[in-house]
Length: 58
Image (cartoon, rainbow, N blue to C red; front, side, top):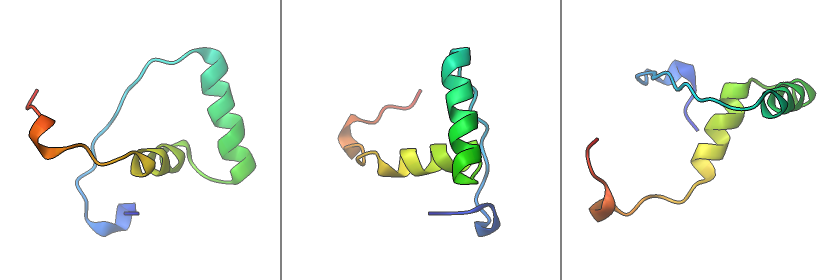
């Protein structure tokens, strides 16, 4: 997993979620002593790799 020190270009992701889900993320990240960004990074890394021929530029 890459970290901020790996000279990667950082993008911002905004998403709309319910208050209940937001607070769930905040509590989980505090309990695990991690940032929400690191939890999202780990989740994204766990997703299967997309098939190259199905990717379209948007």
